[in-house]
Structures are given as C-alpha cells and as structure tokens.
Length: 150
Length: 150
DNA sequence: TATATTTGTATCGTGCACGATATAAACGGA
DNA sequence: TCCGTTTATATCGTGCACGATACAAATATA
Image (cartoon, rainbow over all chains, first blue to last red; front, top):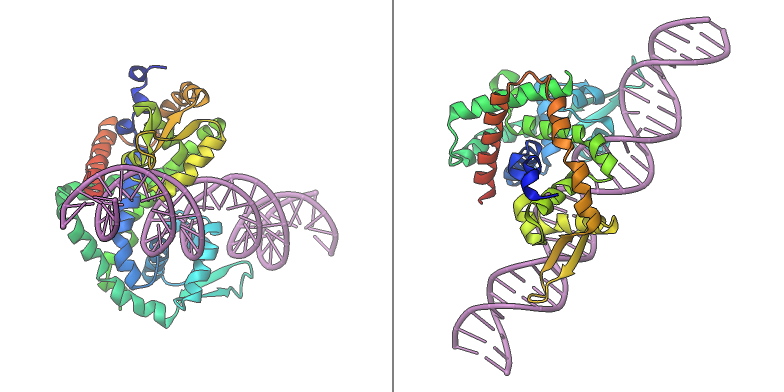
C-alpha cells in the first residue's frame, strides 16, 4: 500500500494522538509542583474531588474522574499510607468504602491552591489567547461528557 | 480553607483533567478495533510513524510521538516479538537501533486503514461539527508543538 | 424465605510512562 | 592519542490504567 493512498493514517491527521501526547506533556508540567506535595497527578485529581465534594465513595470518585475502581483502589491505599485520606466501610452499606480527608489531607489544600496559577504562568508563552484556551476547555468538557456518557 | 475560596481547584475549572480523561476515553474507543489487529494504542502509534516515514531510529520515533526511549524499548521488543518490526544496529553508528517494518508489519496497514473512519463514525453523535473538530485538532497540535519544544 | 441478580470494591496480569541511572559508541579537543 | 563529553539505547523501580475475574453485601424476585 502506497503512502499517498493513506493520508488518514498520517500522524498529523490523527485526533487522539495529539490529545494523548498533550495530556502527557501537560502532566509533566505539574510534576515538579506535585513533587513538592509528594503526590502524583492522579492522586492530585482525587484530592481535588475530595476538597470540592468532601466524603464520597470509591465509585463516586471514579465517576467524577472517569476512572475504574481497579485503578482507584491501589491509588487510594497509597494516599491512605501517606496519611492524607481515610477509607472507612459505610455502616449503612458494608460494600461501600467512604473516602474522607484527614487533617493532613485538608491542610495540603493550602499548598495546592498555588498550583493552578503556576500552571497558567507556564502556559503564558504557549501562543494561545485566553479566549482560545476557554473555547478549547469547553470543547474538551463537552467531548468528555459525550464520551463518558454522563 | 473554605470551598468558596478555591474555585481554581474545582474540577470543572481544570484544563489538564479533561485532557487526561478525554484522552483515555478516546483510547478506549480504539481498543476493540486494535484488538482485532492484536496491538495496543501506543503500538499503533509506532506503526503509524513507520508506515508514514519508513525506517527510523528509536529516538526519531520518540521525537515524533513525544515518548522516551525507556518507554519505547520494551514496546518495540513486543512489536518485534509479534513479528511486525525488525530492530537492527546501524552499521555506521553502532549506538543506533534502526526500526523497520517486516512484511507482516507492512501488511497490517491494509487492515489499519479501516480504523480512522470507524473512529469518526463513533464520534458522529458527539454533538460536534466537523468545523469544531478541526479547530480543536489545530489547537491541540499547536499546544503540542509549543509544549514539546519542537 | 430461599434463590437469582445487581452493586461496590478488590485482586490479578499486562502494558505503558517516566525519573534515575547505566553503558557503550562516537566525538571533540589538548 | 588520550580523555572528557555527548549521544543512543537500555535497565530498573514505581505508579498508573484497564480488562477479566472474584467476592461479599444488598436487593429483587419467585
């Protein structure tokens, strides 16, 4: 099969590829800031969900972050080992594990609150207007909702 | 710290989070089609690079896909084990490993060429116009280039 | 009230990602 | 030519992701 016949397979014509690569590169921008808090990016997302919505089950966190419980269970155990969260079986439903923040987990928020601005700053030379960024973000969330079936 | 004080930490105000989640969800859409070819999504990307640009070194593939060699080396070994590629030390520079397609790897292209249309079809009810998708893709690639420093 | 089904979480195995580090080949001077 | 530096790849350890599966608690149904 000749190359000229298959532009649909060119890297520059893919949609998922730049999404996948950009996602990884942006995560890398977070890394040094998250290292200071001794957490990873997925752990940071879990903490965002807890800071915003307080106590919730593993499945609820998974629905917010579009992650399966088989990803979350070990991740949550690591956060628990760090002393940032608690995992307690619900009294009313013994199947459910309620995840809640410890004092240390609550306190970490005051450090995390500095991060978004630092990320924005590192985007300042990304040759993107704020308007363009907002449109982009809107598209992403609408895609996410459609694909996630939420 | 009260919730009202920290909208910058709300999930719906993040940029990287929807990028990260959407990337994973779209990869999942590829999975059944890639399963038929017995390859993973990152392996598919490597093959795209090879189908488009022919023989190249590990580092060249990494530059195109924004992946490190420590990710690629084991992935390439798996593709070699499947009989889809060859890994040969360059004669002129013994440090360089040249990756090239086998006959089976070349032949797989005729199956892969069906995939992009299938992906587009599964996006048809994503409530996004083609124009919107193209703008979105452009933004992604420009972000990628800026962040990747290419 | 037994039994079947659903639900919530966990376990297991495989394959990425990636920082840190190693190693050998190539290259660049003094 | 010797040696320090760079370059290309590889190894190692940790932490996701996720499909497949397990399992017990809860719920539904006969």
